Image 1 (tube, rainbow, N blue to C red):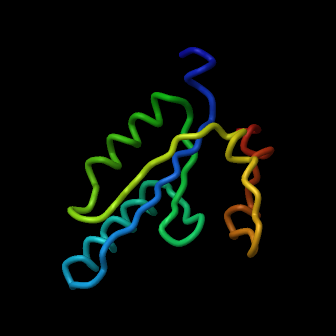
Image 2 (cartoon, rainbow, N blue to C red; image 1 turned 90 degrees about the vertical axis):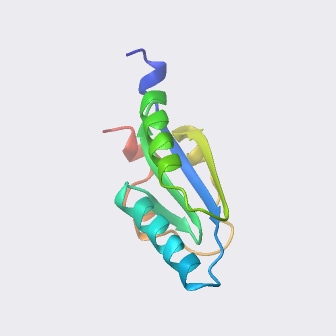
Length: 110
């Protein structure tokens, strides 16, 4: 494995799913549970992110994500480096419990 493929990266998933009918609510719940069980943390409502170890790992998780998409709605995924993710500025609100526990500097220690 080259140094480039072993860089820590973040996958950020944005989704907007309909929740009017009982079937749509069920699809939303199943998708959200998949994200949590697959190691994603909620950044804010309908925005989830996870750390991946390089491009190969990112591709694996993107395939897994594609296999678990809900039938309706909008789901987008953004792949960024850990350095780019560390540049996020919190303008209003507080850090989540996960953000308080592990920051970008500590991630590099793993």
